[in-house]
Length: 229
Ligand SMILES: NC(=O)c1ccc[n+]([C@@H]2O[C@H](COP(=O)([O-])OP(=O)(O)OC[C@H]3O[C@@H](n4cnc5c(N)ncnc54)[C@H](OP(=O)(O)O)[C@@H]3O)[C@@H](O)[C@H]2O)c1
Picture 1 (tube, protein in one colour):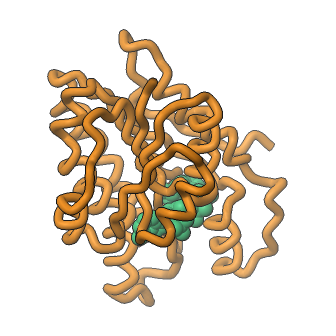
Picture 2 (cartoon, rainbow, N blue to C red; picture 1 turned 90 degrees about the vertical axis):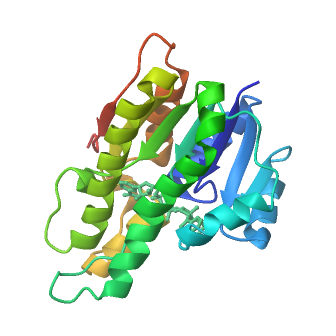
């Protein structure tokens, strides 16, 4: 049975991925920002385990992981958690930059670093859920786009470094996806939110699982997923 460590399993795309992997009987380790959220996730996915670590505070992840049992085998590490806060460069304060860079970029780098020996031993697949904003940053998407452009660089460097060690690295770049995050984006844009217009999180989950389940002779490096209507 494969073991998957998932961030962001509580909502949106991450919840769709976790539900699919749970339904097929795989072993889930779910990163949660605190113990209470961890308990909620374990209750939602019986048989799963929580790993507590606040991605907003990457400097403390090493300490947090050192106090818990980290899995001995990880077949896939799925970086799905993320946050967004829009605003023009002329108005974005350092706090807003730091928050998005911490959760969307530095924490995925630190979680990967801390788990790297296990990922190597397991010949793991690492998936980063990026964004269209990780390829092109439009007006008001500067801080989020910078965090996701950085996430692309992290994935590309990791892929090149760890190929000899048998680790596969995939970046998935979804367009607008119907989730609580997208509802917040619409609110910040002052637009009415109609989830029917956007990608179903289940469809993004399908692409993540495709990267994970691909036979070992191949690796999906980059995958853009656009709204189909
Ligand atoms: N929705 C879109 O249109 C869209 C488009 C392109 C890319 N993406 C990317 O797709 C990924 C998933 O987005 P989504 O739409 O599914 O978002 P979402 O519904 O808002 O879910 C975000 C998840 O990230 C977790 N998270 C946030 N801050 C955290 C922290 N400090 N520590 C631990 N976990 C934290 C949340 O945990 P809690 O459940 O505890 O709140 C939640 O489970 C993100 O990386 C996002 O940037 C989304």
